[in-house]
Length: 273
Image (tube, rainbow, N blue to C red; front, side):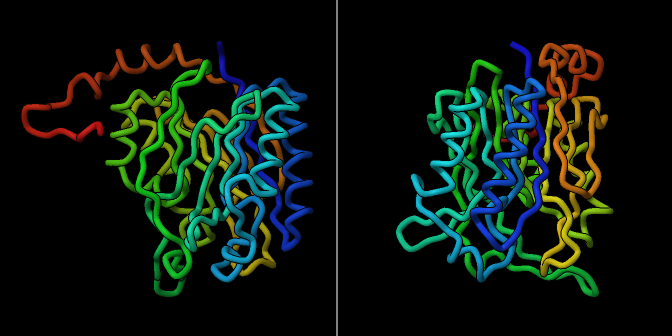
């Protein structure tokens, strides 16, 4: 079965209900274009601000969880629900739920690497002020193929992606919200390199850019192939882009440049578990 991935780059407002309505419209557009897998942005239901995470947060099974399950079931597609602030036992996690076309949760990734940066003259943000880091690496076997999930800052850690590759990930889905300091310089580069060094497909989905927000997302949701090429990329505005991904291409790219087969495991290795 081939993958037709729908990137849903939605606008995020301060109204959670409006954010869910915008996500629904984008998901329906992707499904109408034949998508059998859809990806929403990081914090698609919530402004990307530390004070908002606990306020907009919900436990698993809450409003946003139910919305995602319903959309997956109604549209008959696999749905990586971007990320939302998840509440559990007094903690807040940055969490991506993966739903099957039956509306069942089949995976849950909590952002492993929290976004704590301070760039002189640029962006300062400290997720750890409110969020708790996850402690699981997420790869799930589906009828579409083996899907890995990471969230935004996770993509900067090649070791995490190497382990996902060791576990067989063929397409890694990354809801992400790079900003206007790091986005123009690092966004394309990070996604292309993770695809190239793991020789797999990597997809990133960002919120659309809102110049009036306190945290301005870069946008430019994209899909990269194992050759490090960008298969498709949006601009900064809200939009939906559907792209076909042929996992049979993995063998072709891996045969041409045998990075994975050529590793010197006698000298170094990344634990797969």
